[in-house]
Length: 170
Ligand SMILES: CC(C)(COP(=O)(O)OP(=O)(O)OC[C@H]1O[C@@H](n2cnc3c(N)ncnc32)[C@H](O)[C@@H]1OP(=O)(O)O)[C@@H](O)C(=O)NCCC(=O)NCCS
Image 1 (tube, rainbow, N blue to C red):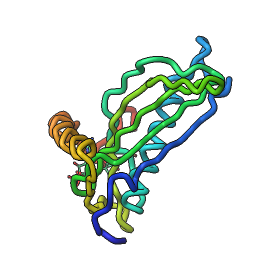
Image 2 (tube, rainbow, N blue to C red):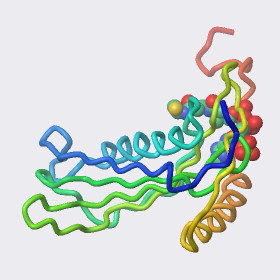
Image 3 (cartoon, helix red, strand yellow):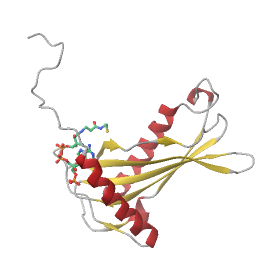
Image 4 (tube, rainbow, N blue to C red):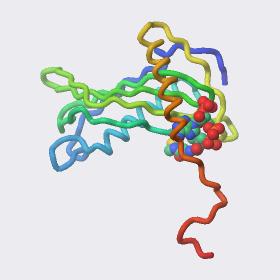
């Protein structure tokens, strides 16, 4: 695959879901876990659109639900790569609720996810560099770099895959 630098805007994904009763909770609004699923999917597509490689979700930052998306409304998700570090990328994803009749939109969620690009051997592989073309994109890249430092400082140590699993016979 090519490692030629690419524009951040080229990774943009807009995904729209009409919220059906099966997506809901007992409050008549969208189940939070369903929104998390859509965020992961939308952000994964943005990271793949950038690197054109298989990706896995390495982490999802704190997620705040600012307001509900009601059943019968449209959930409109926007995702775009904010920064590429090495093999990993930060993707920002916003969720908006859109009233299908009035067109009114309310912001419901903001989140940041890290995806890792995988090479043909299934191991992390370098992703193409990212080009920013506006002050806003440059500011997003700077903020992503700061978040990465915090994230990696808090990253849990990976377990030894050969370590025994609790409950396994001795
Ligand atoms: C994510 C994963 C590929 C990292 O593999 P690893 O062997 O630990 O690799 P490394 O330590 O070399 O890390 C690779 C990159 O991931 C980043 N990374 C790893 N864990 C991270 C975390 N928790 N948060 C943010 N970045 C992380 C590293 O900083 C590195 O990025 P860089 O190359 O840009 O500096 C591996 O932990 C994994 O496969 N996890 C499971 C993924 C999964 O199943 N996701 C859900 C389904 S898609």
